[in-house]
Image 1 (cartoon, rainbow, N blue to C red):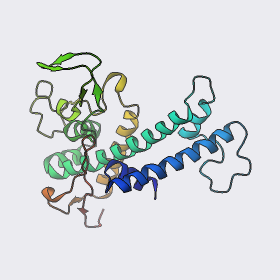
Image 2 (cartoon, rainbow, N blue to C red):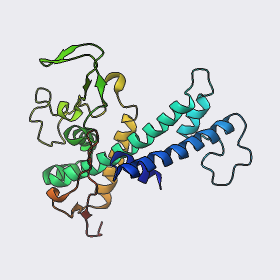
Image 3 (cartoon, rainbow, N blue to C red):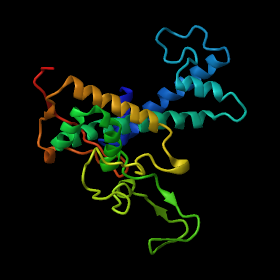
Image 4 (cartoon, rainbow, N blue to C red):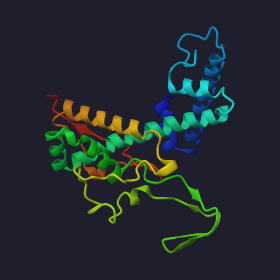
Length: 256
């Protein structure tokens, strides 16, 4: 399997067996990668085979994390493995959904697409509105009450789990007027697509850049891009935390 196949299977499993196999294979790949980069970081890995994904620590992010783990306060091998999973799955799946979901909403709102084509200076704000209106992450990871706490008139006993809906917060009418309207001219700062505070996504600047670059390139290269399927026929990935279409059929003339 490829990294993309593993990631897709973990996020939207086709079966428990397939998901388990994907986790096991990805774990094996990253564990071997961490071992090789760790050996290279201390002068090992001599004679690593050509094309070996480890070979030397390298200047990539994983190499930097492995090298830093040699410090007394560095990450353990288990923590490095968890970080590798997080960076790949969270960083890949969410950006894919941002780009496809953002494009879908532009195609479903021709007036907004026309405005963006007429003024590409609206692109940064458009990406923020895409994140707010239908962001790739709909809920935060489970939280657990350390002690009884009352929220919105509901008592949450100690030990109970709570799922926080980022999507609902990003459509709060007290903060966003007419929240169910997709408007790329909106000033949507304050949405929670990337979380908040100590839980704010460390990859937010990269995700914004990837979304902006991908959408700008698509609109420039395919000036007559359109949907090739009815919106209500699209299949959405199942899951409680991530939101995105399984596929986005589009059409264009080939001109431009």
